[in-house]
Length: 475
Image (cartoon, rainbow, N blue to C red; front, top):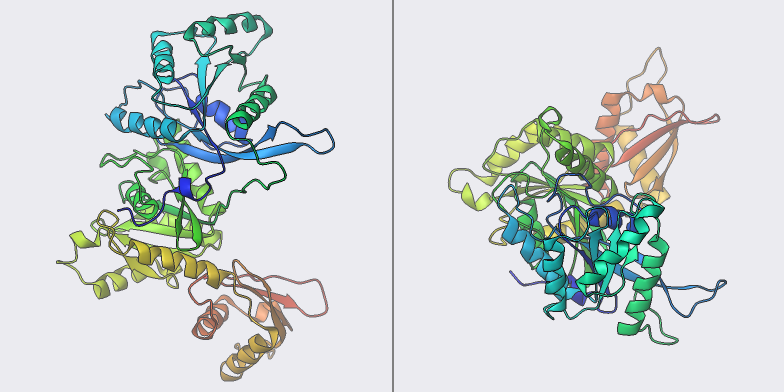
């Protein structure tokens, strides 16, 4: 499926810098250090990183001054380890992802481990980089220089024929500023920023997190959206470990799809890699504009689906329930039957739209992207105060709260105070008179009328004339 342009075409003036090397030299630690936050999973066992994990980073650019420094944005790409013997037999797929990263790179950073010394696999990687298969210039970095006495060992890497190595320590950040400055200088030589011109800025677009159980087809869906093999796809569970940002464009709109590790029950998490992958999946929900909860149509909904649904509700995220692999079950089930089933199984997301698709064939994928954009627009809608108060007046006139102790709830005024999610504040005589049942009723009636009926809506009840007492509800 090649309906959509590759990300490279979105930002042709933003250079890519690929970090490569054999396993266990600390590439992911350096990547996280340069990014200023934990993105790639770092764990002692080799072969943790499989996909290309990328992030935008600002590096110094030559020609600036202390008062007016110059910088440029790069896309930094973390890669899997060269020559890894993957425990799930995904070595070929990992190597293919590395090859793509090298082919698209404007600069390559090769990392070696100064504490382990130069190994035959380091020499093999260096030969590959010198062979011309990757035309980009190479910056050699010697990592794990964690103490001054190790600095003399850095020059052992000169034998690789890639120039003088720069010492760095991902642990202590020793040499990090020098490495970033050198990256900026080397890129300026290869891709100078035009004098007087504006450097292109990275449009991160609409962030959509793809979450779900293991083997639901998340990576296949991300590749279908991006129109390229951006992440590794395998029938084996647990293939994706990091949360991988993939940018693509449909029409004039830019998206960032976040491919996440498959979630399993917390008590079934077996090791640190699964633990980190699980928490990055939850973090992806928090930083998303829209969440796609991907469900394998062949598999019954489970505790994991409910766990993810709860996390989505907790953070008030617009959500699409995407039923994947529908082409494999459509002969034995109807969409009407499945709608009834899923509404019963996930009642907390009853407002969320449901999409039926096949990520493998591409059926329904473009429609899903359009629905993502629509939900984002709904979440950002702001309703006029006059229109909102007229609507609430009609609702309360038809069905007011039940009186308590001879006192009935009254609403004096309401206004929408926030978007994403739409948040409506109501000034009332006593928030305690608006119980959970009435709040649910009010939300359901609002959804019948407002132009943001398919996204979470928060209600905040405030007592008039004193510090507000919130009774927030979302659905």
